[in-house]
Image (cartoon, rainbow, N blue to C red):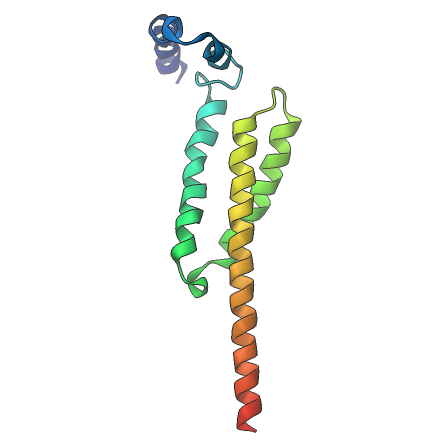
Length: 129
C-alpha cells in the first residue's frame, strides 16, 4: 500500500501544500492529518453516523436492539481510546461520540416502543377480564 500512498503524498506535497493557507499547513503535516489512515478511517466512519440519522425515519419496531447496543458500546470504547492515544485524534473522538449518541437515542426509542407495547397489552388484557 505504501507503494501507492507515498508517491501520492509526495505529489500532493508538491502541488497542494504550497497553495495551502498558513493555518492549514500544520493540519496537513499533523501525525493524524490527511496523509494518514488516522484521518481517513474516521472520516469514512461518519457514514455510520449518517446511516444512524437516516434510521431515525424508520419505525421503532424495525430497529435492531443488538446492532444499536454494539454501536453504542464500540462508540464509547473508541471515544475513550482516541483521547488516550498520542497524538489525540479529535476526528476519531468526535465520530465515535456521535455514533454513541445516535445509538443511545435509537435504544431509547426502542425502549419506549417496547414499554408502550407492554402497556397496551396489559391494558387490553385487563379490559377483557
